[in-house]
Amino acid sequence: MSNASYRLKHPKERTSSVVFSSPHSGREYPSSFVTQSVLDPLTLRSSEDAFVDLLFRQVTDFGAPMISAVFPRAWVDLNRRSDEFDPALIEGIARGALSPRVASGLGVVPRVVSGGRNIYRGKLTREEARSRIEVFWKPYHAALQALLDEAHRACGQAILVDCHSMPHEALVSNGSGKAKLPDIVIGDRYGASADPRVVGQVEAAFRAEGFVVARNMPFAGAYIVEKYGRPAQNRHAIQIEIDRSLYMDEARIEPRADFAKVRAALLRAARRVAAIEADDLPLAAE
Image (cartoon, rainbow, N blue to C red; front, side, top):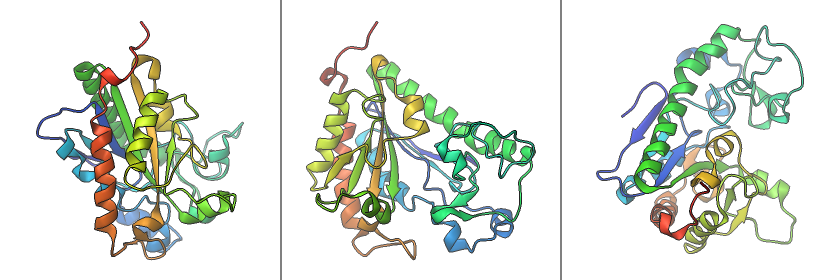
């Protein structure tokens, strides 16, 4: 199933309470957007979580659905609130107290890509920004909410695994220089978006495949896990960030020769995650 906003793959039989999401891997760039931008096409892709949807698309074999964005993050960012407009980019938006993300140009309609490079020559109209929310942002979130509600009704729990990738440079700049850099960072907003038992099982699944795993540093999770994570209701949301250098040439945005090997290891971990059962967890509060 697909529309302008997302692609949705259903398993032949839904046996898992887990929903996999890839909101930043969209790579269908509107021609008008490419023309409008001051950046070349490769630079415009630098914020993209390239190929993450391909890494995880076989999770449907484990009884879990997967939803992934069609359009790019640089066009509209699903991991932001729908009202996080940047007054430096959108006409008619009042300047006020801005979140650090919006202030840096990373609102729901981004002003910049990686490295703080401006996307546009000038400003966008408020109508253009709101159109992107209506046509792209809202359908994705409506579909994601429906998937999680279905899981909760069927299994008594819902677990969102929100799949992302992170630039290797971000890990280097945040590393202490002593410990080995993580391959995967699990974000649960420091325990606010998922029960620790769920997070522990997810972490163990990736460690079993030899990945070095860290929690919440440098990425603890943003809007999506904050919105959908309600552990007291047995609704858990976890962000997974994968070091891009493990599977792709970051400069060329091309899969590495060992892409299939990394994908196989991630899928073995995903199989264990998809098998997490409600019986393993405490009952939700009444």
